[in-house]
Amino acid sequence: MNSSIARNPAAKSKKELRATLLEARLHAGLDAAGKDALERRVLHALTVFSPVSVGFYWPLSGEFDMRAVVSRWLASDSARQASLPVITARDRPLEFHVWTPDMAMQLGAHRIHEPTSGLVIVPDLLFVPCVGFDFDRYRLGYGGGYYDRTLAAFREAGKVPISVGVAYEACRTDSLLREAHDVPLDVVVTDVGFYSDL
Image (cartoon, rainbow, N blue to C red; front, top):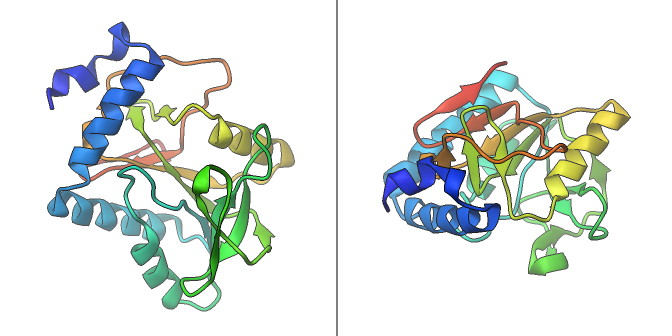
């Protein structure tokens, strides 16, 4: 891919940029060394922030698959909990339901796998999938606004998890077009970087 396309989004709408970055992510996800490097940075984030409970995501469309690393993290301490998002309504924040590696799953909205536990938690640390991101840790997602609503709801409730974006470096842009509701992530981890002000 021509990296200048991803680095200079100024001439692109969000829709056009999203398509470009989704393609870049698919290519990046084929690189085994890059996936190993991203896994190490995810583990580094877990070590640095030492959460007891973690929210993450079921992988879609070339997203980094976090299930193996989260499963190992869970196995090393029985007090730890992991959770996956559940869409309860199109305009509502996500709920995070407890997940275990051997749990039966069900297909939810957008045909995304969801846990069947029914146990809702607010994670200490939330891994957020990114279609793209910029140096200031603003995120480009799929456009549904689910994570924006969810993080805003956590802030309003006073229960704010550390937000950690997960992306490939190929999906970094110099600057994203921002809207009033956009809030930067606390951290973004990639196959080559760890972006944070914490």
